[in-house]
Structure formats: C-alpha cells, structure tokens
Amino acid sequence: MRGWQVLVRPILEYGAEIWGEMNWKEGEDLQLEMGRRVLGVSKMTTKEVIQGELGLGKESSRRIELRIRFWSKIINIDKNRLIYKIYKQRR
Figure 1 (cartoon, rainbow, N blue to C red):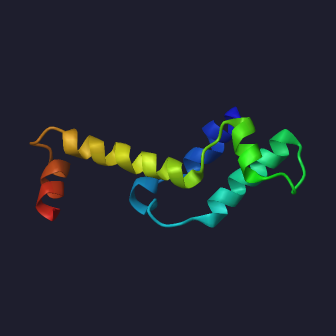
Figure 2: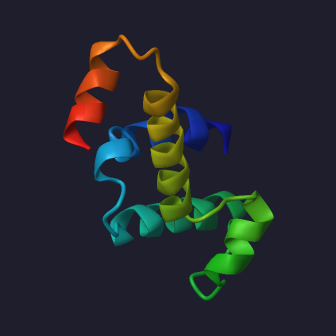
C-alpha cells in the first residue's frame, strides 16, 4: 500500500487541483484493481469491502480534498504575492 501512496497516486493526482472537478472513472477503477491485487480477492468482491479493508477513500473525494487545500493556500497567502493578486482580479 505504501508503494501505491508514494509512487503511483502522486502521478495520477498531478495537477488535480485544477482538473479534479471532472469525473474520472479510470482512476477509480485503477485504485480498485490495485486493491484487489493487494488483498488477493476475486472480481466479485465489492469496492466497499476493498476500500474498507485498505482504508482507501474514493479517488474523487481525494481530489476534492486537494482542491480545497490548494484554494485555501491561495486565499491565505500574503496579499502582496502575484498569485493572490491574479486570484483577486479574476474573481
């Protein structure tokens, strides 16, 4: 599981703060398949069991969390920074 969290998930989530609003079924399926292989269970095992056993949430929930953290950083950044000025101007 550590390999998934350290090696694979960061690549899959790269830039999710920007594109994370859209639905991404392939990402959810990939996480589910990885969970099946780690646990050694059949394809008949439900995704809820796999997620519960491994302590995984939905990938879409993870992307929402990343987006919230990103926007929180922008809102709380020093008001003189360029990124904040662009954010305020675009709003």
